[in-house]
Image (tube, rainbow, N blue to C red; front, side, top):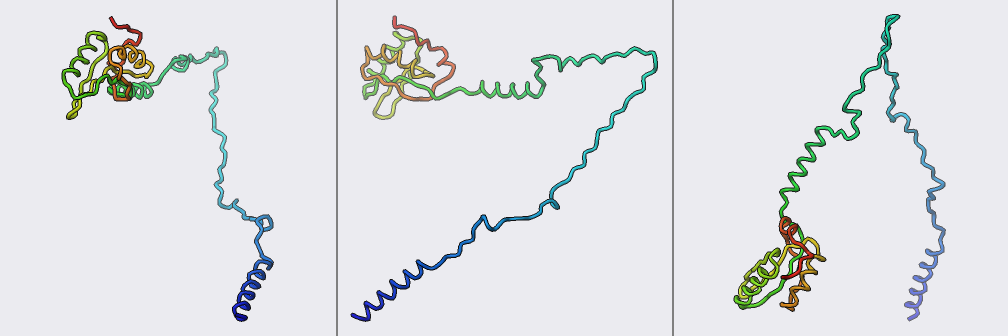
Length: 188
C-alpha cells in the first residue's frame, strides 16, 4: 500500500513539475522576416511613343478631320454583341416549360367523376386547360398553367365552390399557355 501511494505521489509530482516548467515559445513579433525580392521582380522600361509631325506647307488652311459616325452614335451596338443577343433570344425561345402551379381539383378511383371534373372546367373556365392523369388505380385532374401562385389562388376560390378538396400544387407548366390565362376572369 505504501508503494502504491508512493507511485501516485511520484506521478503527481512529475505532472506538477511539468506544468510549472518554463516553456519557450517563439514569438512572431520578435522574429522578423526579411528578404530582398527586388532581384526577382519584373522590370519594365517606359518608352515614350514616337509621334510623327508632318510639316505642313505654309499658306495651306488647317482642316479638322471628319468625326467617325460609329463613335458619335450613342446607341451604337457592335456586331459581336448583336450576335450574342440573337443567340440568347433563340435559346430563350426554345424554352417551353417552367416551374409554375396547377390546381388539383379531383383525386379518386372513379373515371366518370374525373371526366365530370374535366367537363366542368371546359364549361366554366374555357381559358384553363384540364390535365387528366391515371396511375392505377387513381385518377387525378389538374387544371391550368399558372406562372404565379397568386393567379392560381384566384381561380382556386372559384373552383372550390364546386370542388371543395381542390388544392394548388407546384408543377411544370407550358409558358405559352400560362400567358393566355386571364387571372381576373370570372366564371360564366
